Length: 120
Image (cartoon, rainbow, N blue to C red; front, side, top):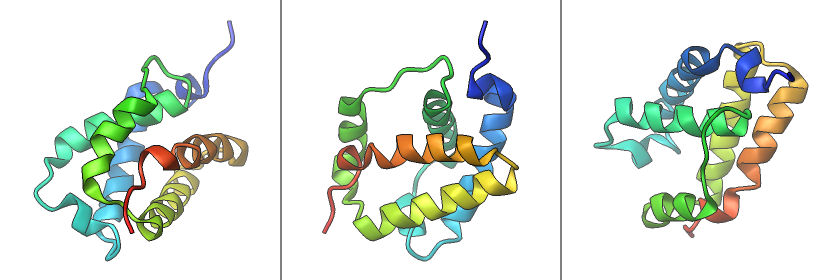
């Protein structure tokens, strides 16, 4: 049986640590932190861990419609989305995720931009 990227990187426990670090960086960003004022970050990290697991071939399903429902009201801008992509790459690099795997994760993220960005 072929091991998924999600399994290779340690499953939910490791992905959750990566996501927690990702959000530490997001909250330190002048561009991104405003989107998370008043957000329950424990819940956000749990939700985003599932999304990352999905992007990594883990046992989670997301639909584009769900992404639209969650993000439409947030008025996320292109600038914020691009900043998220940078922070994501830096976090994955710091966790020594393989460059090919970073490409797969980033591609999955960037390909969903039309379902996340509604600002400007």
